[in-house]
Amino acid sequence: MKDKQNLQKRIFIGTIIILALLLLTTLYKVYDEKQATSNKESQTYSMTLYELIDDVQNVENFLAKSTISTTSEAGAESLTHVWREADLAVSRISQLPLNIEQLNKTAKFLNQVSEYSYSLSRKNIYKEELKQEDLDNLKQLHEYSIKLEQSLKDIADRIENGELAWSDIKKEEASDYTRQVDNISNKIFTDIDNNFNEYAGLIYDGAFSEHIQKAEKKGLTGEEISEDDAEKIIRNIYKEKIENITRNGNLTQGEIDVYQFEIKEKDKEERTYISISKKGGKIVLLNKDREVSEEKLTREEANTKGKEFLNKIGYMDMTESYYQTQDGIITINYVYKQDNILVYPDLIKVKIALDDGEILGIEATGYLNSHTTRTDTKAKITMEEAKRKLNKKLDIQSEGMAIIPTEWKTEILCYEFKGKVDETEFLVYINAQNGKEENILVIVETPGGMLTM
Image (cartoon, rainbow, N blue to C red; front, side, top):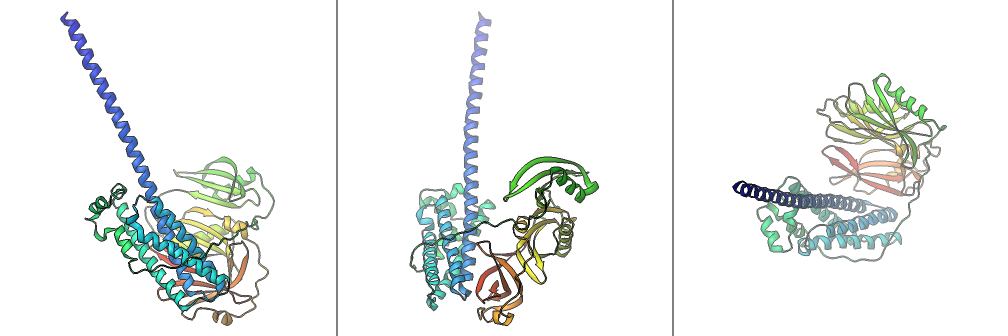
């Protein structure tokens, strides 16, 4: 009898333990799922914040362009971009977990930037000259946009460094939010709004849109090749370095039909992925993902490695344009040079490891879309005549000739002038046929290199 009672007791205790374990497992699963949901939300909010920063930076750059434009056409284009980017920024703000009070003035500012830039673009389209008051307003908007970008970057840095969490920001009551950030200098979102305390509202006046056409693949020349031929091209490039090649089938990349391959090199862990065009047998994409632990090469040495590889695979007469360095890898934009004319549509991006000069990436779709020998390269106005079309404030640092693409995939022969207004660097393009101001780019210095926007 006693044994039976002991057995029942053990069964009862065992059942309790099992139920407790099941309960703990269930609670852990619920917690884990909640934590995963929270992490996913935080990642989404952070991505939206970075996209908002990009939008505001674009607003800033296009506003800068609009302040030095000398033609109504170029001014209308820059202001239309401001309108679009500001609208995107307002949309991003609505996706962040903030109450109305937290970014009220900021959202209002971006809405009014959008409305005002649109209104001025309509003036430009109808050949109505902008008044000095309009230009002064644009300059003021540009200054405010710089403040906004800096404030948003500060938020992103604090979140990335763990000083602030989205769970802290995501409070329904302003008092809760204030308590969470009281110990953080500059009070974050409130300070953004304070940037615009002196800002006055502007006027909205309509809507605008534009059409973009596709480009034909001018750089894809020659006969169609077989998959065997494509593999031979790769083996000829890498020669004895190859341990084996895997064929990964056919697909279309950037509207170019390609054969895909995976390369395993001798004594190396990482794989290289290459796409070869069916027509002409050109490398369209190349990618190898590996860490670079130290930087031994200079930018000039890496540039030499890049050019040598491009020559080896059949991309001749390429010259370095702009570059960006990150994590020991330099990405260089190469453009085709015909005589002394830079042909910007014929673009190839090359990633080079700064430890040993290995080519880690190539993206040649721009070149393959556009490359051909240009025949209409004779200017109808002189360099000096083109200079007279520039904003008088532009301090010219260099000059040359270039062919630039348009949004409609056509091309224009231009004089290219690099210069400064105050502390901002610009590239200005004047049509070499009729003296029209065709485009303005802002040159942006980053810790890793030079970019244009």
